[in-house]
Image (cartoon, rainbow, N blue to C red; front, side, top):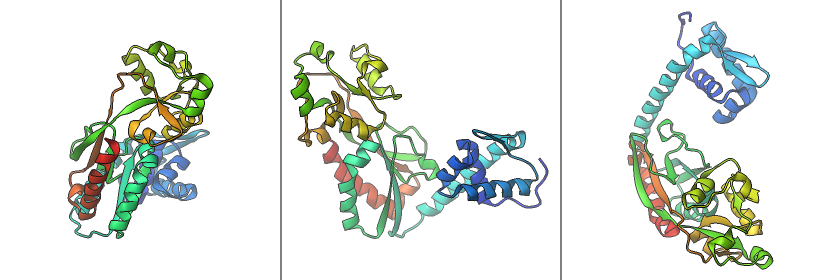
Length: 298
């Protein structure tokens, strides 16, 4: 690669990384919250600055050229260094006002967190909240989120984590479903009922096999990977399904199956980057979440 007369603007490097890691201009633009034409101009600007093509335009996306592949690793190193600088600077801030970005699962974001955030806003109106409702793992080290609520113990370095408790899971069905299909009284009878499961996610299949139920994807009568929609399918009477006990017992449209099943609980961990945890507004949000979530998930 030719030597540059000047270092490319960081925004162009971010655009390059977004397209390289998502595979298209449109997906990269969505990842950065900009328009596709803007993304295209930034990629063209970087290529002009470097004097070489970084991508091959293909019908279904963008593929790195040899020059683009050569640039990928140092660009990722630049992002890591910039993120460390940003985290270090943000961690020194003493200003309570500002935004805290929180990521949590779809189900928790829909069913548990809204009243918790309403209380937080009433108590600390100077703090704005961004909620990333997602079942993917946003990266705390790259500031994709300031605080994460995870259903597993984090393994990343440079993060602090607090175990808030365990969410009990149970097997539920809609009252309308029981009126139509009857209530099972044994595990053997359960196997004759309809179940709502996941589509591509195999967590339920693995869990059921772990307790001795030899099932596969096609065994489930209705399938959907979106957690909240999956639960709505159970509530509508499409079949029996697994749900969080605290949330489900507060729902008058469903009933829990009265059969003792060895269903493991889901651990809930509050996680933040170690440097950011000391920031006043993040510490205040962290403390509020820890205080309010414990009684809601137990």
